[in-house]
Image (cartoon, rainbow, N blue to C red; front, side):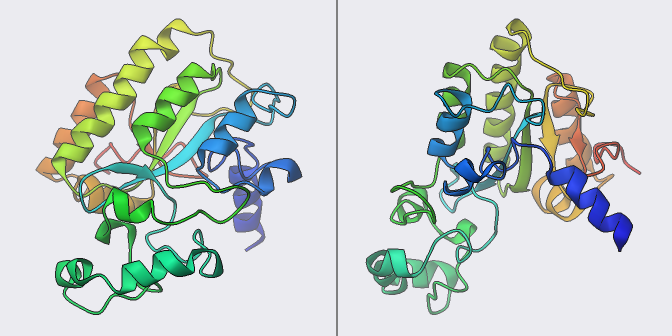
Length: 249
């Protein structure tokens, strides 16, 4: 248990964790994986990306019902979207016949998942924290990181990608960022950075297998080959980054 806690502390010490929100007290007020947290941490008087404790920008991505790639950590909504701050949006959600027919049961805010909702439906909600932040699309987030001059590595954690089309879009966005921006930027590598490449992926085994296929399967092999061919290295286990889930065993 002590070893596990120590590993967790090491893994979460990175100031860029969950899009910079999980760092100093100033950033704790912002929603995780939000645009405001990204903007504040990359520019302005409180920017922290040059701090040695900011080893890489890490954020969480999954696919909506209509195939959009969004930043969201949990499968469900309740930890990141406050019920009291979203009373009207929850009424719309729970009263939607379309969503009820889509999931085949009564709609309850407490049990609905990101994958059950369209981007438009997700963006009815305010994220918990400072301001009126909404769920962010991956394409906009990566473009903003680039426009604001991110100079630390970019590591994307895969939560759940359901469709091949979304996987293809994900790789396209990442390879474009890698080849068109990161390769031409003087990326700062801190001593604690332990990935083999400055633009790559994180994921736990269960999320890898539900997103790109059972490890060692034809689907898994295909997508891992795509990742490596684009120069994006592999898919690494959180906390202990030496484990690459693009290696069959």
